[in-house]
Figure 1 (cartoon, rainbow, N blue to C red):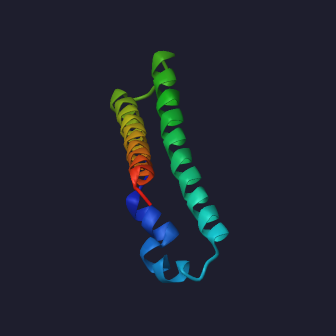
Figure 2: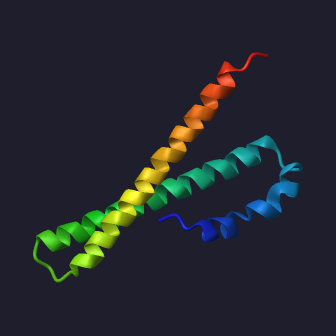
Length: 101
């Protein structure tokens, strides 16, 4: 699951606003790309953990049902959050494209 505090600490977004002006555009693109890749990897890890726990439960291994349900809900919430963020980005892009120059 994407932990907001760790994201803020890891990328130090508030502290980097002043330094971003001095960075080249390729550095900014690389940093944003890295941020997106990390976020998508976190969603993938949550999904894989949920699948693994569900498979363990189905095969009869000793796994607590509530842990399986928590993993499934975490996976679902992170996926839905990712989808909503994507929808907002597409909506913002479409709004920019509708602007007249």
